[in-house]
Length: 509
Image (tube, rainbow, N blue to C red; front, side):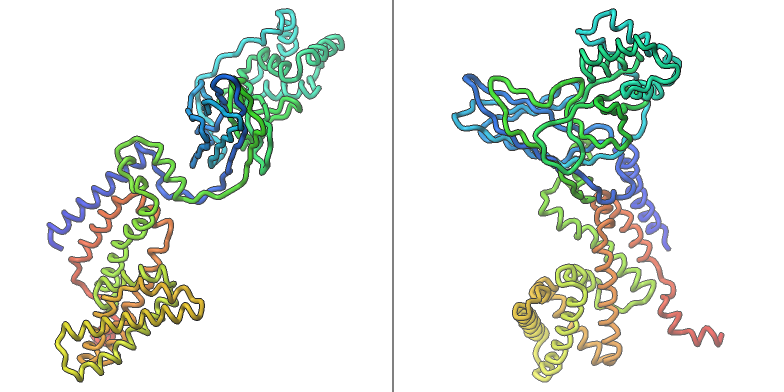
């Protein structure tokens, strides 16, 4: 190989590697496309009744956090205005405006992907103060009950507190008068407040959280639970039963720090209904939402920013160079005979609509019919351009007949033959006839079979969805494809088919 070709290939590979490395290391792109994931489809619908003044309905919405991805959000506000606000760690949707005599129907929907969060080191949140209705005497009493657990790690302390809420105080248990005092305190303030006081006395940061249980359901109410910081992560527990949820936590968090999910100013919200259903989100959707939330330069210029109807085209178009690379490999290295470069690639694209079996059948049918007619036309001694025009007309007639036949038989694949590259088929018929006249029917059939074989291989490559997504996310891989094409273009050695062709010569030598 000459040095300029090697330098060009190396430069193209370097560009591809540099851009991909930047995406993976700095933009946190996945090295391999993510597999389709199970998700939850969340929807909310409610009726807003107005008051004398402007009405505001504030509803806690799910937000992207560790272990939780929110995608495909849609808002229905009717005649009301919608605003998205942040209140600390909470994401609040506000529907506001004047409500007429009839109720306004508001709605929200989103796709939620929930997965177990990885433990991470973070600064320990501060301890919340005791509830204001708990006096200092009660605080000292509760502190004395849990003092024996102080030497334990936070996670163990949490489990002791949870067991105490279920009536198991360990050995030795508190004295009978202390147990009676504790039960009186719990009955007076309720289990939720009693739980929070125990956690505060044990030195465990805790917060009340409101959300939905992750089960397929339709419900009009949310659920409240407690999250406790144990040094590396928030653990969730059910206050009524004193049970700790095992990861992954089967709960969808809507609001934290005791903020209610639904608040209404100057009005009333009724018939609120939350719906959760399981679903599957594709690799495309996951990557699309990850990029659409980013403001980085390469994300802003991503192919995912194209309108969705054009994305489908580019998913396939961007793999055409891979098809061309396969043709170079099969022709120059293996020795497949083909009718040029474009025919196999265009045939592979057409097979995506007709299907592989029907596409091959139509290809062979049109070529053989065209060859018969071409032999008859040869007797007329027509000039090249008029002769090709006649063959082109014949190809269109064949495609039309296939469509009509498919309509009668109910075969939609035959009706998709209009996408076959009819101009290339016209030239294929002419090349097939010329090769038959010059080298014989066997060589012509061999070349046609080689073209069909390469088209089948290319079709298989174009149909690989992980490969489509990889090139769609990393279009700079096309530089690497071009580099390999440059290197193949300088290959002048033996083809594999020639080793078989001259095997007798090799044996004798």
